[in-house]
Length: 192
Image (cartoon, rainbow, N blue to C red; front, side):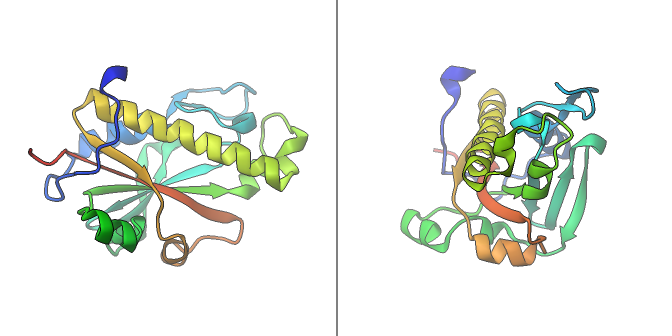
């Protein structure tokens, strides 16, 4: 599986993931995999986070709407009934690289309030903006790595990239303590 891990930008825009495949992808990315995490108060996840703060939220942009992944209940919560997949890729990326919009766009959002008020160990760095940034970038990378490995294991294409943060912040109606970080396109590779 590790030999198959790669970035594939050429994704078939018409081949939709099944509901089960999407569910398995999201669980693999950042799902709940044990009742108690390292500090005993919050469920553990498939990707680590600073002091088990679980400060990263996964939003899932699909053709029929954009959803928040509710990992503890393994469900999607509708946050916008529009197709926001286009905002998950910068226009310049689409134009210069001639990249179609993937069927699934994962949008990574940090909630700084959860980072600062973790139920885990209250490490001093959790309150320092520079250290916070290091933590949430690493935590996002851990989740994105899980997505890449899932994609490799299931014959999917995945691509981690920048996104239109301003547009997504408005469209997702984020709170002041939330920040859009990155996006990740997922789908079936285009036929050669």
